[in-house]
Length: 308
Image (cartoon, rainbow, N blue to C red; front, side, top):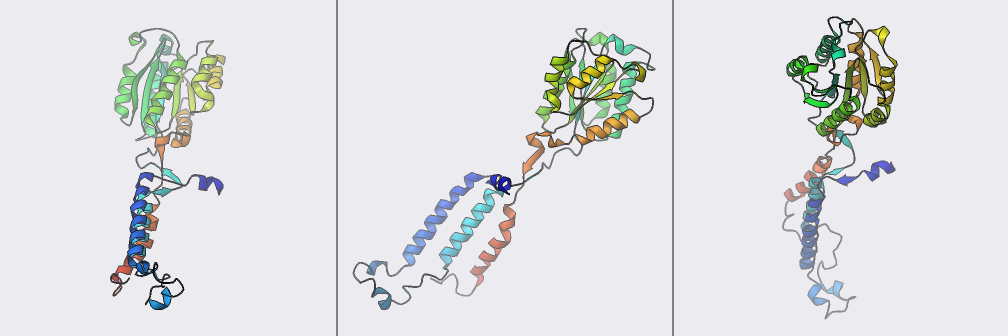
């Protein structure tokens, strides 16, 4: 309960400035409607109520007081009182994924027919088909990391770019997985839709554990590593990289079992990972509308506007 009260605030607090003229209007109208004001200086206070007609009636609600109440209530409603969050209207129903693909000569090995790189393309194609409409981006890396495509729901473009990438187009040979993961994480953060990272690699160069831990952010963003080697050839380096990244290591399978497992994990990485654009404060001022309507209905009473 205390935490809920701590979250109470206004979406548009500057609108509350309109309460000042509402208060001033009520005060001036009240002062002008008091017909006994000019007699208080010359008539004893205990005699004044007896010498005036209706001068002592202060309990009756006047049109001016009602107008001030409607004004104040309407101002509060427009200011947008809120205390709860709700999903943003344009937040993706399925969180995006950044594909981090290793592009090295070793990925051309044919121990996974037709090749590790081609099988990676097939697995990505199957994954995008399972997550129809979900956005996916692409980072390619070897000795350097490069953003090929930010998250997009256009799977045809992504698959064509992934197929076009080869070791020959990479400027530097090597293994900069940590750099690639950091680039993918920054890309997701700039999109503000949450999401996770999927690494497709057949090996990891040694000596990157500290960098991978920093890039993984201690599991701050869900990560999965798909080992692009035969299941019986998964190396200790891949397992160590998955541990350093706080990632789930998924072995390659001849069917779509690995892809389905990855898809379930990706769909679990909802936009609730802390990206502020994935949620918004809920509008609750409209709940005051029935009360405003009830107060405004008083103006339809016979003689109400002329009442003092």
